[in-house]
Length: 318
Ligand code: PMP
Image 1 (cartoon, rainbow, N blue to C red):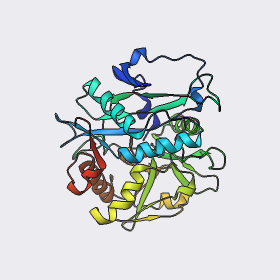
Image 2 (image 1 turned 90 degrees about the vertical axis):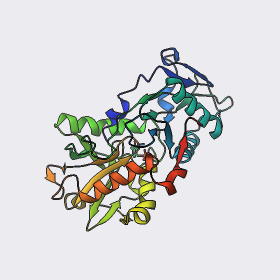
Image 3 (image 1 turned 120 degrees about the horizontal axis):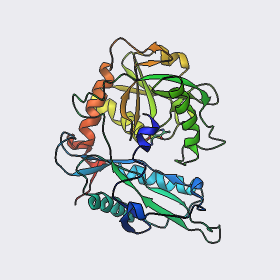
């Protein structure tokens, strides 16, 4: 996924939630002196039921996992969390309802210290912007099969003993931005970063999986990745629901080149197939057959079509 896809709606929809109230997004103003660079955030999606395109109601995918990571990120960065998980869920639902979205929705809860906050007086802003977002999911969606040429960036992924990638801090995305801009400058669609040991880490805004001999493999958390909700979901359920074996182990740059298929996974990136890495074509068929099966499976999960995984969905309108 390009991080810019995620950032494209940065101005948000008509309404957002800020410090306890739904307000007009253009009234969600703070002083330029706010320490926003110390902030953290979360990226969450709510999908329409059914075919992801028609009329319908949205369900938030993996709310509990995302909100738990939000709390962990806040704790790591020493941010005070003024609301409970339950209050944030109500806030998220209220934001979607207020905007009367008729499509799939991206929510981006953001937390940062208020100006003047200190250890003895910790106080945080909590804002939930939302916007409608296009999707690569859905059966026969042409956006899924679009070609995507990636490079291995010359930038290394931030090391976990410097700026922990497991916390979703804005600061981490300076690293993503460097790799993203490098790929654009060279005329590519995106970048994969190696970690500080030289093993494959992740992309700029999504995790990476490769397929080799029918097995889907992804780098471990110790390879400086964000602990992706989507990656965890796929690791857990691909073997049982789709019959695809999964593995977690370090990958070299050569493993990428020699893979049968490669794809990104993430909330924004969903299941994004990769055509080539460093101009080396991945596999013989694009998108690869397992990537396509995983895409179809994930599409059905988030749109509520797999009964036994409906407990991963939180209805917005009830
Ligand atoms: N890595 C990075 C750097 C990301 O920004 C994201 C998107 N949140 C992911 C991985 C995927 O994480 P998730 O599946 O939880 O969205």
